[in-house]
Length: 249
Image: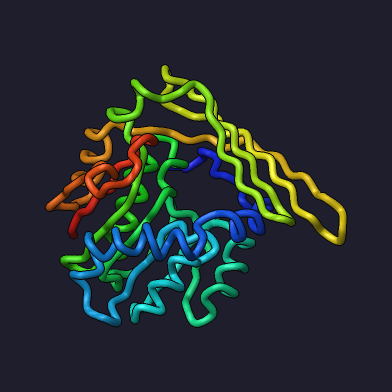
């Protein structure tokens, strides 16, 4: 099958993603405690972990500091350039998450707020199949994904995210198309380069899936012992309809 759906072009926004998104504080205070509860407590120190869609590598570095052998995989060369700066002792792989092929050497695979850019069930199944192949027997796959069942009725037609510091700004405007369960995200970034502001623009697409679609795709490639959680189960904000899945090979 040919995978033709576009993926977000992060290259013009890599600096803004690195400086404004997934801060070290957010990862330490929100992501790591969740991972400790769901997966890290079940892994020995030195376990091999793959971060799927690792971006600028900040989670990889936090895992490295905690004694794990963390590897990051991402489709953006520029984001991986920042990742190698942020976590210089870690390994990073340039690849599309729908197409990567790795041998079964990982004890766990993680993916946070990445699969929302997968636009159909066939490609989602391809991602899950690649993950299944990369995991050792009894390995764990933990990922977040937006769920239509939880969000469709409360989704606003438009909302925005704005992130800013002294030298960069990132504006994301979300437009919901309920009949397609998709979002059109208009992205505008500004960065100060040699005292001149540079502007970049792009349009990204996001897709929401039903719980049954995600469950079926996981089962199709062989995952068992599949659980899912609403973020409110952990005392977090669930206003974006995000689910956290935990499954085992």
